[in-house]
Length: 108
Image (cartoon, rainbow, N blue to C red; front, side, top):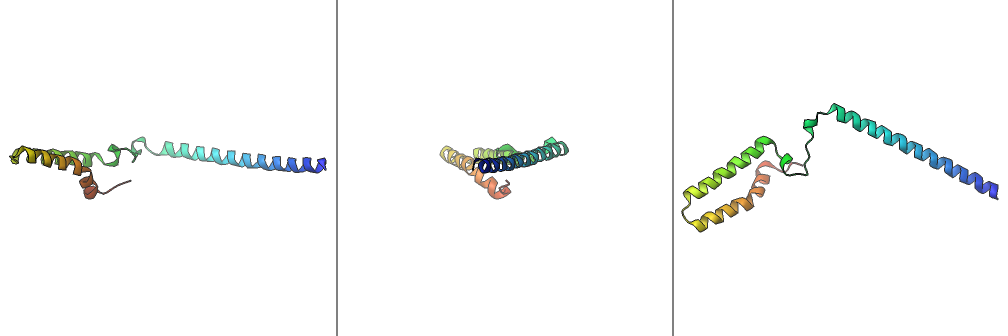
């Protein structure tokens, strides 16, 4: 009985060793592939979408800033009532993210 158990345990250990070796080869292959892709792809193309600024191009960010400053300037130059100025400024500041997503789309 103990010889049979020892034989089965040896078979299990051999199978586990084979699986570990296969996993190690797959992991090494994955690491080599990632390293190759990192070498081939230029670093300046690495744009992360989880952050605020890289989600938009430089031209889009500049356009958003210019449009916002232009709208704020127009509000503060042409609206006489100070309370209405503040309300319109708040509406612009609060509604700007929604307007940007509607106008430029949500890229992810």
